[in-house]
Amino acid sequence: MGTYTVKQLARLSGVSIRTLHHYDEIGLLKPAFTGENRYRYYGREELLRLQDILFHRELGVPLNEIRHLLDLQGRDRAAVLSEHREWLDQRIRRSRQLLRTIDRTIAELNGDGTMDDKDFYKGFAPEKQAEYEDWLVDRYGGAMRERIQESKAKLQSLGKEGMAARLAEGEAAGIALAQAFKAGIAADDPAIDPQLQRHHAWIAAMWDKACPPQAYAGLADLYLEHPDFRTKFDSDGGEGFTDWLTAAMKAYAARLG
Image 1 (cartoon, helix red, strand yellow):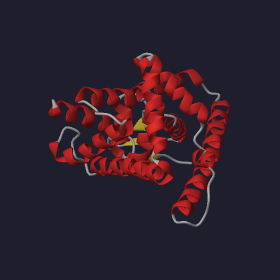
Image 2 (tube, helix red, strand yellow):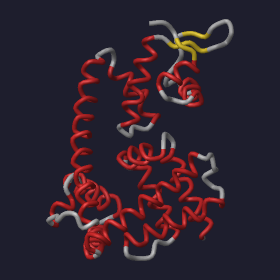
Image 3 (cartoon, rainbow, N blue to C red):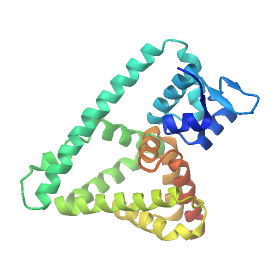
């Protein structure tokens, strides 16, 4: 195995040249050496370190914590990879269950099948839902528990078709914002107000109550604080989407006053 320039490593790994330069600047991934032509060159150790970085990013670990984790893990990469493998295996099995649930729901909505009410939620880990709820209550106080239950009751009252439509609207709102991010639009650009308005309205519908500007900005902080949200959003919209989305939400909230 030889060495790779930044351009070659970007093509090999799928990580952008800009991101590799950023990793170098913050000391997360330094090249093996810099040639007389001032090109950065990466060897096997750097390729393995980049793999570790991408694994941690997939797990939603912030960049400022990844270097510390890499320094702690030392040279025992086999143990680290074993942990990654276990996590990925669990994720794959859950994703397969979610795909089966989606397929059955589509069939149900098309009149081609019947689902028990309990089947509508297969693949959505109850322990994860409980973890999120406990985290919110701890973060915002005991009144949050009642608000969560009210929101869940309202969503379930919509029935299967209504619930599927509500969740689909949230997915569509998120996709529209991800497209704006990928197009390079600045997070504070009022040009994306229509997309943010759609997302804001969906949040209010999910809460079944008004979502004041300060609450919308607070939701952005929640997205930043919980690593699972970063994992989801960066997976949906690409690396950096979580930071862009939350900045956009706060800018929009400020414009609303």
